[in-house]
Image (tube, rainbow, N blue to C red; front, side):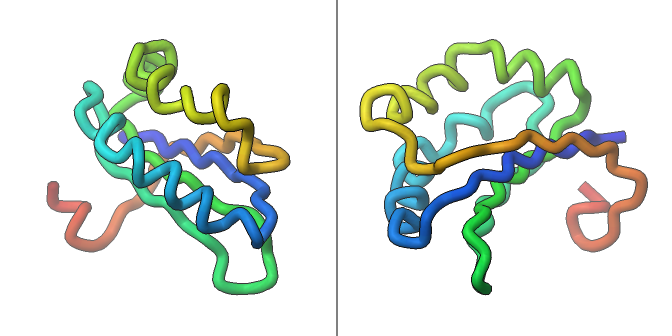
Length: 106
């Protein structure tokens, strides 16, 4: 069964557009990775300031291979050169126990 990784990133509201722009600039970096299944970038539409980067992987090993690979490093180069947009982050990890909807038949 798949694993889901959620990077919960605290982003001040005034930096939401910068955050979205940075992800748009590196679009596609993760989609070619072995074992990659899905990506979502979520911005709160309430008073919260925690944005979520949600990825789904075939296995923990696939996620770790991407995390240690060159595409991850290249995708995060903006963070090193332009400084962070977020003020903190936390990585959450889940096993998918049930999945409904069109993606379930893929």
